[in-house]
Image (tube, rainbow, N blue to C red; front, side, top):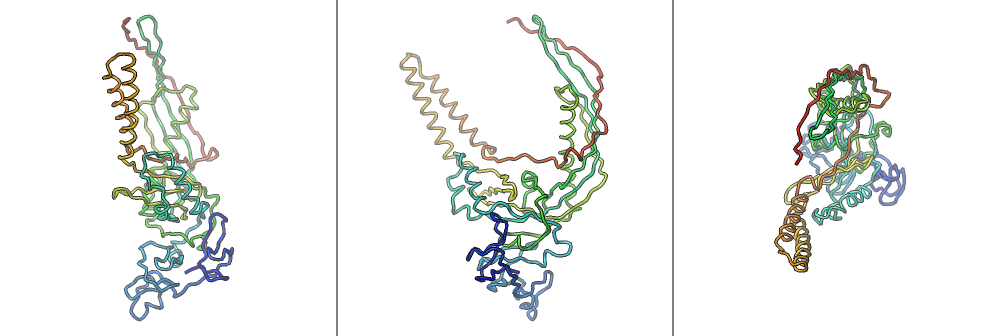
Length: 415
């Protein structure tokens, strides 16, 4: 199905900047009407006799309701653009029954703003390839509604450790270290709300974890018009299949929550925690299915893909920019030459051998090059949320029992 403008017949699409449907041709607002073309029934096999009726070609490809172009439809695709006429096609039959989202969060960031955010983010990266944020490259950016399972998990967190507090002081040539040991226990009931796990095979798991959280307070019941102009898929895996990933996040956030409580609520400020043990008891799990907005920018450098992702609601950017070695080594050579020239000039003026400044210049230049050639140099990271509010957390047991105190000594040379 396609949303057509009542006024000019152009393709209507959702405009995140105004939060409404808009015609890009005549700028009319909320003037859409549905055009279905041939009826598309997902799962039906097109025969030579029924192909036209079902909206498929005789070889099984989707026929564009607007221009009749054959489109090779992906296994999970539910919204796309026609490669021939750019019509915004929604496969409504793939968004029904068990595949109908409970809710969706419409894009708040439009394509122009997404491009501007990428440009601003990477403008300060001196050694990225020059065409990383070029207009020609940025044309590849696409808005996706990612199928996402949300988990409401009620769990009990159990944490045990030996808390160590060390205090060191010196008397003469002797160093004394006082070591206090505590038996630390925490039992916390926690309700994790709307913990997201993406259900699209094409999105790396760690990317969705970093893009999160999505504020589901801005979500609304599923409406296909919000998909017009964007790409989307059905969920690729069931909630049960993806449950281990949700559990892994509960364990990650849960242990962090316990450790934070130990350090903040104990009143001690432990130097370290030894022999720590953590486990989770799951009491109940409820799942929800929704569509979340993500901008994806596919960039490749020397045949290596470098995908970037933007949370279409909050604007968080995740990805790693490539580094152009030629630009790094050129900058390093310039810095080395400048330091070397200054060092040699000083050596001549102060009448000492120039070997030392030359060596120092070479070492500094090498350090600069190696630091900027490291894969992490272009990495963009964001903090993840815990998905547990204060009202959904209850500390059932908090004990810090003193076990023993010992003192270690170490002789320090008077030299």
